[in-house]
Image (cartoon, rainbow, N blue to C red; front, side, top):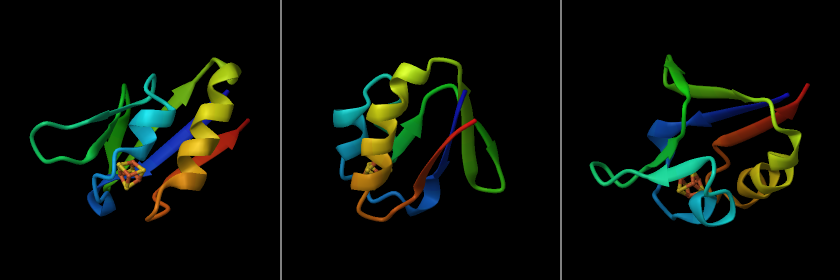
Length: 76
Ligand code: SF4
């Protein structure tokens, strides 16, 4: 299982995460920030659990490449 967390308020809308992990992220047309698909928000942190470990690589790439380092990815 992969746990992904996005601290959405700090997103600068660079689009990188959507490019490398389109299954997980979409840019919002409303505010231009990334949306972590199917996530739940709590205190500004958006979290989702993914039961497909093959998505780990793309999500790690998003986390590593995010210029403001607001994506965290954990394998459990
Ligand atoms: S890579 Fe980071 S800053 Fe860029 S759109 Fe995604 S969450 Fe926002």
